[in-house]
Amino acid sequence: MDRNSNVYTFIYASGMVIVVAAILSIAAINLKPFQDRNIEVEKKQNILASVNIQADATNAEEIYAEKIVNSYIVNSKGEQVEGDAFTVDLKKERAKPVAEQQLPVFECQIDGGVKYIVPLRGAGLWGPIWGYLSLEDDMSTIYGASFDHQGETPGLGAEISTDPFETQFKHKQIYEGGKLVSIIVAKSNESAPEQHKVDAISGGTITSKGLEKMLLDDLSSYNAFFNQKK
Image (tube, rainbow, N blue to C red; front, side):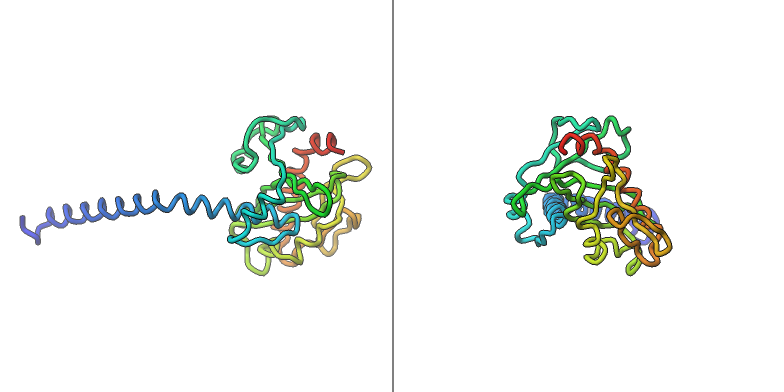
């Protein structure tokens, strides 16, 4: 076949595309177990961070196994249902009606008692935001919080994942007079009861309010469970 012909060029290019695609597919298949493991370890780090335990990739699994003493799924009525709390996909669950959602709960043994950890997922300015909130056994006092994001602006919305923002949540209250009020992420000109308020990020109003909405929406889903545990 004439190597200068269009037919040869087309066959050669098609063959190269097939070979490269095959190599990439094999690489993706071989790398997936490592990618899945990294995601699992990072998730355990984030759960531990919500109870103020800093762990890295080398020790997260060991600390998680020691400190997370129980995990389970509840429904919107607060009833425990079958399933693995760790593998619940919050993105899929939040797309369902609340009555059909699976709601993960993690229990951590720390400071001489049990802290209850729940996952959160919402929307920021540029994409999804998520995190974990831990509660004391009165189911109202926040013990700790950990947040993350997909693409918020560095120095602005991305500040939700920094210690100065997250540590504001410790000791805040999500109930007032038996009613779930969640947490107000307040702008500088916005007033709110101090026990239910944290300061919004300067210049990151949309992300701050997205996080506020995430807290109210997701904690409301757990309201029946919280009331049963009080």
